[in-house]
Amino acid sequence: MLRFSASAASMRSSAIRELMSLATRPDMISFAGGMPGNNLFPVAEMDEIYNKLSLEVKRIGFQYGPTTGYPPLLEALQDYLRQKGMPVDSNNLIITTGSLQAINIVAKVFIDPNDRVILENPAFIGAISAFKSYQAALDPIPIDDDGIILTELQAALQKKKPKAKLLYITPYFHNPAGILYNAQRKTDLLELLKKEDIVLLEDDAYGELYFNAADKELTRPMKTMNSGALPICYTSSFSKYIGPGLRLGWLLAPPEIAEKCELAKQSFDACSSTFTQVLAHEFLVQNKMQAYLEKMRVIYARRAHTMLNALQENMPEGLTWTKPRGGFYIWVSLPDKMDSTEILKKSIANGAVFVIGSTFDPLGVKNDCLRLAFSHTPEEQIEKGIKIIAEALKQQMVKKK
Ligand SMILES: Cc1ncc(COP(=O)(O)O)c(C=O)c1O
Image 1 (tube, rainbow, N blue to C red):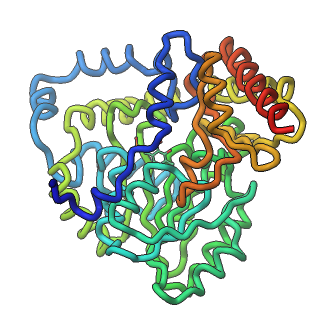
Image 2: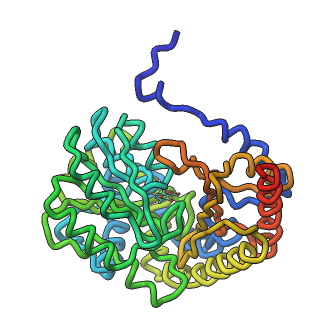
């Protein structure tokens, strides 16, 4: 008998994986993956960047690099973060292998078995798994259209045994809910946390992908607004902005925390890919990032708009869904405690796939909801896919009556 660790023993492959494996038909319309569209990647720009690199820099790209990151990229990222008003001089920056690694590292340096982690419900599945792998006790708090519900958070903060150590939130174009925290919620949240002995992990993987410039101010990270002593670990990533295959994210944290995180990262992978850091560095310093993001904002806004229209036209009465102002996702709430797994089965049989709600419930229960990603599906397929899902829903509703 293999004697797995308690952490590995608690890892479960969900039944949904098998269902998803049926969804690989080439004509399947997928709203499942939380990723950019394949044909949107800046391949030509990267070709040009690589071809123009000096031999010396190409060789650096193949080599190990410092654990905290390729120094020229760190410098360029610091400039970028400084422009956003981030406290880069009083905090340390670490390049990570995606922001999922940043989340994992922060969890590793803070969480012992049964330590309490507060997080939103729903929440990003990667973070849920990371916290669970350190055997955290998860304490999910519901959200509304403007962010985490503060009265519920306050009650959770008052619980003493054990006292929560970490609060993880995704305030900017939430995955899966698609919501954007409003300014008041962010200020009130900071006020509430001021007196707490807790670390805030602020996950900002999508903030640059706002659809209207007027919303840019709302994507201002809480890390820029923190005048008190609250330790905030801020993470973001190139995954949704350039491409997840780069596997590059970053963590900006107070020095005391960052030093521990650097040590933890040494045992994970010594350093993130120098090769992709070299490319990302050039992308930033050649000012290609802003122009590229501007194009992506327009494309994602159009896709979101098409999906919202298709939902409006095709979905039966009784459903509600979030109206994203950026990012990749629409979160659909179903009526009468309907089960999204049943709808997914029918939908897959007819050629469209999405992710069921319980995937994003930290406790894995609540399933009367589902996530639609509009980011990687061309507009012409969006309506067709939504019609398939709407049909599956209608059939399920008739069956329930
Ligand atoms: C909210 C959120 N955080 C972090 C990540 C991790 O992204 P990566 O590790 O590719 O940077 C994702 C990816 O889906 C995400 O949705």
